Image 1 (cartoon, one colour):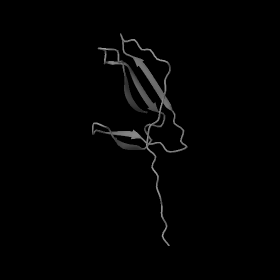
Image 2 (cartoon, rainbow, N blue to C red; image 1 turned 30 degrees about the vertical axis):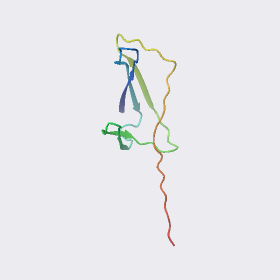
Image 3 (cartoon, rainbow, N blue to C red; image 1 turned 90 degrees about the vertical axis):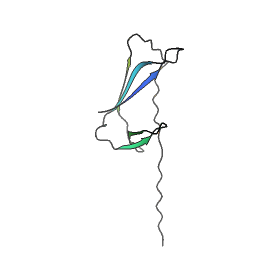
Image 4 (cartoon, rainbow, N blue to C red; image 1 turned 180 degrees about the vertical axis):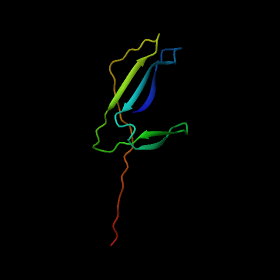
Amino acid sequence: MMVLSFCLQNFIIGAFKPACHISVSFSDGKSRKQVPLKKENGQTLMVPLFQSQENILGKISIEPVSGKKVEHNGIKVELLGQIGMFHIYFLP
């Protein structure tokens, strides 16, 4: 399974260390096509490619860091991406 790791930030004054570790794994992570994504800092990250009408299956794990307090009002998952449109022109 492919795993993407993210960290939630605890924005309480003076406590800018992650409050928990979040990992996202997709059921078909090893076989799913990967595409490069350029981050704001110029680094390139390989991310999974999903196409329209595909089911997305996986698991999200949230593990609090010991000694940190985590509060939430639910978990929201958003898929952000880009829509590519390909136009084919036929000339007579």
